[in-house]
Length: 175
Image (tube, rainbow, N blue to C red):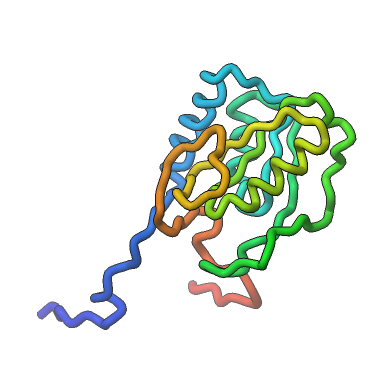
């Protein structure tokens, strides 16, 4: 006889979330790349906003055939729904000496509050770069509207590269 007993965790519906899977990611990224190409913007450099923009930034550079790739390390979110007072640039710092006059595509996973993206776009403008931004998701509360966005959502987003907790300590291997 099969048991139909469920624990309370199994009965509780999952919170409403956008879930980007490894299967959906390439489709989303290609659609985002087509937006960039269709606009006529040809970046000399793709800058990924670390950490969330690392995977999409690298994939976007490949999709656009852009050889120049850099990263800007920005810390803002400390946990789900928890942020620092202001986003801040973390070391190592990217060499921006070659950016004046360059066409730069800034790539991140999400424009949530938009404060991180606004900080990066402001930094690049001060360096004399012609910068545009591309994100997978844009939240309606974002203080900046990215130039390119795959999808608008007001939900928390689960990305495949950050869906699991960090690996720590030893693990047991089952035979």
